[in-house]
Image 1: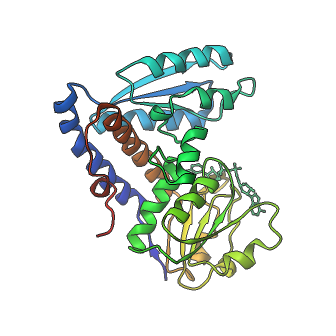
Image 2: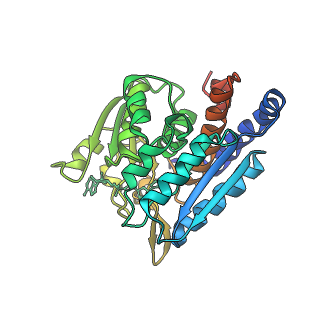
Image 3: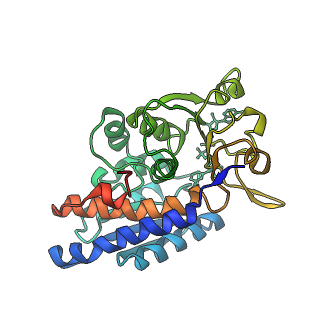
Length: 295
Ligand code: NAD
């Protein structure tokens, strides 16, 4: 049966490699890298994410700057706060926790963030940089998926990859990153005629659908590597987008939920904060070492 990809352990290693770079950054600049996290409203899941991000930031030796705002906050007030964070030299990374309340213009807020502080990588400038092969900031969850894949496949070039889902947060940047790794990439989505027919061809399946157990074992090619991004709350607890129990009898390697992609997202946020800080200050970083790139 499949190798279970231990995202928790791999993320802990990435966090340690990031933390190991912080003293040199401090020596060079006289300060720690700073991450500002903005939480608007009372969404319970968002509050947990923000708390975990703050703790992980401090554990890595970085400064966490947290702004909690009421759910009555207007777009103008948020734009004003983002403007102040853009101008604050102690802030290297800005993360506005999504989803924002329905009355807020989310796209305007994303576009107000300085692209060089956009540690979520959601700004259109960073999406464009990713699509055109320029250095930028890459969305944390898909980046985490690539780092997990590299532990199984030191060489990704030429592999058939199928991404299930086309969101701006996961599916689309995932497809771009796999393309950057020279995979042959197919994206299937809600309007695809026969998603399973495509998934069955894949050496690598990345599922980001948001439907519990959407990918059945029968859709997985024997030996394939399966990365399950889904986080779905059900009566029986957290489950992914893949039927894990059955799929792990067919796949060559698979991520569990929880303990797979989730921990990598936060580790990559710290990694992006360090990268943003180093670029802003002109401090050089050995990214291949930090990312634990295959030799
Ligand atoms: P989304 O709802 O924005 O996108 C879902 C995508 O699935 C859409 O592009 C849609 O086309 C596709 N889809 C829907 N039904 C389909 C079908 N029947 N066949 C094929 N494709 C279909 O969701 P998202 O933000 O991309 O998140 C996806 C999942 O990943 C969610 O469970 C979310 O909670 C989880 N997630 C996890 C992390 C993490 O840190 N692990 C981060 C972000 C999102």
